[in-house]
Structures are given as structure tokens and as C-alpha cells.
Length: 79
Image (cartoon, rainbow, N blue to C red; front, side):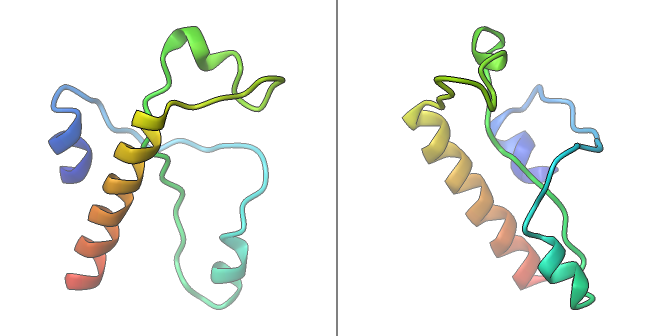
């Protein structure tokens, strides 16, 4: 949560259950806890295109999301 609040101070963070498939089952099969985290800010105007025709994400979102994932991994491995 600290990483999210560093990038988005006003954000609310809540767990959710998503439908679909993830490759994290390979880790869970080995007894490794795996959680999804998608650190991307999808504007309401683009939300309807998720997994649809002409799906897109901004370069800024990719850069910020990658940075946030690196921060999360760094925190996890250093604890």
C-alpha cells in the first residue's frame, strides 16, 4: 500500500476478485503465495476498451506501472 500511496496519495486500496486466467497458478502449485497487482491508472474514458478491440495503455502508465512493480518487489525481497 505504501508504494501505491507514494504514487497516488489520494488512492483507496482494496482487494478484489477477478475472473479470468493468470500464470501465477504455476507459483501457487509450488506452494508460493501469489497475488495479482496491476499498478495502472485507467481513465474512465478508456475503461470500456479493456480486453476489447483496440485495447491500449499509455506509455506513461507502462513506465509508472513498471516502476511501481519494481518498488513492490524490492520491498518484498528486502523484508
